[in-house]
Length: 251
Image 1: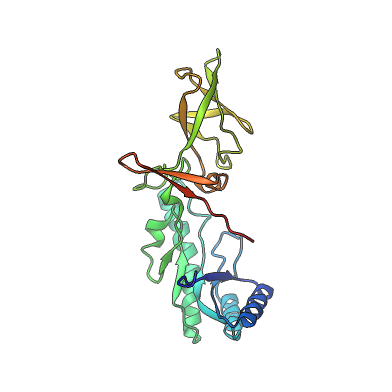
Image 2: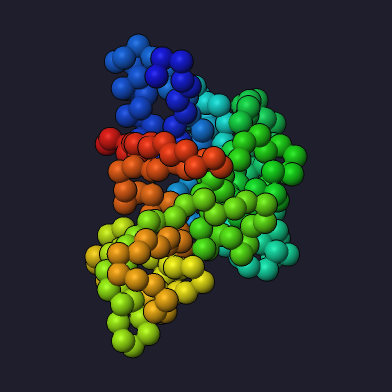
């Protein structure tokens, strides 16, 4: 960790004061980006004067180093109509870049403007002033993103086994909600949507399988599916397999 630059987002006064105090006790300086609410209504200072006020406060902290601003147009990334997605994303990021201009006008340097997601990378990435994209899902993709974003392939699958074949034209696999996220809808097995999703099992349409056969399940949300597992098995184009441990943040 000695060679890594850690940057944390801030938007709350009490949290800022705690960070400043902690850094002081350690004899360190903490790098921060001010989070700006660009329309997702989750976290962040209000664009414009509120960001300027908070930035001025950050600059008074002896143990805090302000590097810039960050925002996330998450409310735009899943809009199916590309024109509407672009319109919403541009409106959101403009709130971020205009806030940055206001800070600079008032003598507060802004080196980083961070925004964007996998669904808007090709929109936000072309906006003048944006220095960093926060994309992540493109590495894996999923059934939610694939119809929206071109140029990336699905690489994340959950390997499951057929537990039994039923007479009603369905079969049961040994992967359920504890193995695959379903917040964006039920996953796919091949081209078939899961019919019934339980804790440990799922029912799938189709009988052209055998008990014990392995099947691949495509999640609808890669992020929260990865979070359910301890390892990733990486298979390259030559069929070589490597195992990567999934590290979770310790709070």
